[in-house]
Amino acid sequence: MELPEQIRPEYDRWYRFMEDRVEFWHHASIFHTKAHCARVLRFALMIAEKQGLSPADSELLATASVFHDSRRLDDGYDTGHGQRAADYYQEFCEKNGQNFDPLCYHVIYWHDRHDAEGIAAIENLLPRRDNDVLLYQIFKDADALDRFRLGPNGLDVRYLRTDAALELVDYARALWDEECR
Ligand SMILES: [Fe+2]
Ligand SMILES: [Fe+2]
Image 1: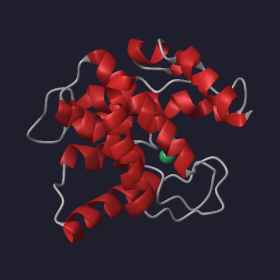
Image 2: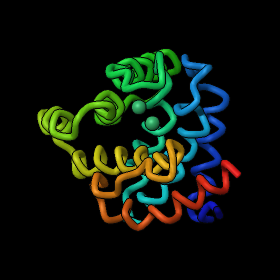
Image 3: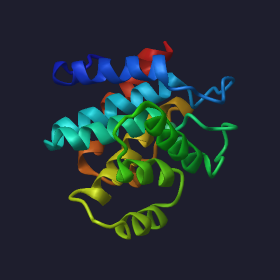
Image 4: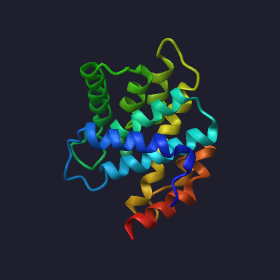
């Protein structure tokens, strides 16, 4: 499936960053590989583009995409891998003098929890930021769009949170069919 030209520069930059700089713990993973994170990155950037999000918001979604599953210990629910990945993101920023975004930290931290729990945590952050809850929902949808890797019925579209993600379901299915062919 064609990568939309508008997102190619950002996608390439973040893909390279993940390959070169982000270290994943669970090397034997089947479902939570860098290839998974690259597809999440693609969906997140496509939704950001569709929704006309700011460069800062796209940057947050891209960062969450490349870090979110880097600290998994297994391919099950592994609840807590979000928190570990968020801590890794924070350490990475501190070590490399890179700009740290607290909202991005919480999007990564809460991505493996129920929406109600994650949204409540994000709503408690101060100062609030425009789109904070929406960014969490978009990120979770981008992650969910790659559920076709779990099987043809891996994604239940009723769980998607945003219309922009719903519009990408056919694309996501076709991308997976192409990648596993
Ligand atoms: Fe995850
Ligand atoms: Fe994921």
